[in-house]
Length: 220
Ligand code: DX5
Ligand code: ZN
Image (tube, rainbow, N blue to C red; front, side):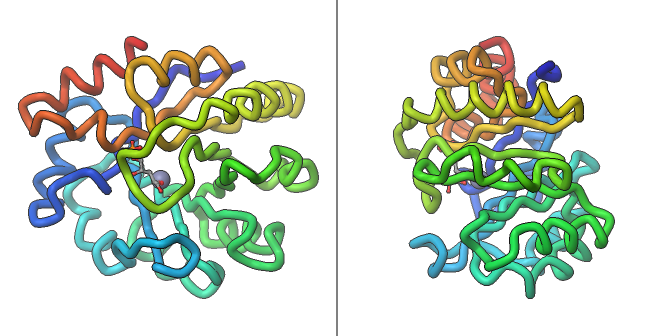
């Protein structure tokens, strides 16, 4: 069964010159998790932040850090992000040759392990690793940038994963990332998602609007 919907603002849409303040503001505005997008300019066509920034942000919120690694190879960096204060570490299956080993490495570091599926990556990638997984992140855009349009074909994948997770009998978060606004949030939750990443939709309008923006997503 889905859990109550969690909202995870993606700081990719925050003011990078004031990241600490921005995280405090979305924390106070009701965010459940802080979603941190790490990009390497190689696995995805954009560059963002590394473990040093995650570590610097850690004292600014006690909410779980939901760290989405869009880097390849990913294995050499797991320890650094764990030490920096990540709570969940999410990787893409294409970011290394041995997904099962990568998930075991994350768990050995004492962190929750997530797997993110690109729009073209099938749900069946998870068939033989679901036991190692705490969170599944369905990309509803091609990773790399905020502000892109929601890819509706992914709703079928969310539905299939909902069934697979429920059959497993384990508590596994089913999170959606990309193009989430009030309308697409509703469709994603109807399909079975129980965690929503939102960059543009959280940070639009500036700090005074964050609480209302988060409330609107949760209400959807
Ligand atoms: C895209 C990132 C997303 C992105 C979402 O590669 O993984 O987390 O920031 O941004 P919006 O909500 O603007 O689509
Ligand atoms: Zn993300």
